[in-house]
Image (cartoon, rainbow, N blue to C red):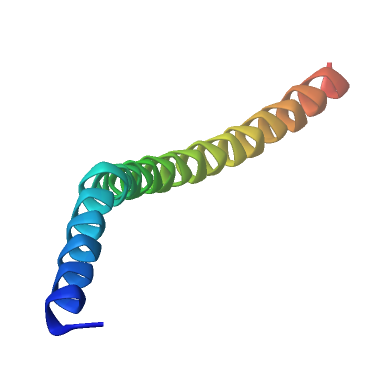
Length: 81
């Protein structure tokens, strides 16, 4: 094998590698980046929903206490009649 043959093999291999990168790896890389951004956005949305859910649960808990207190008052009022 001569130096000229080795240079040709390296050149063809590099060209094939470049074509493979442009045709296969580059689109995959872009798709993975887009998916990563979407996952980050969804994580933020889920975190926001968790906060809202916690607020709703707290509000419901308070409402149940008020309802229980009103039930107790109504029961005492009915019993005192």
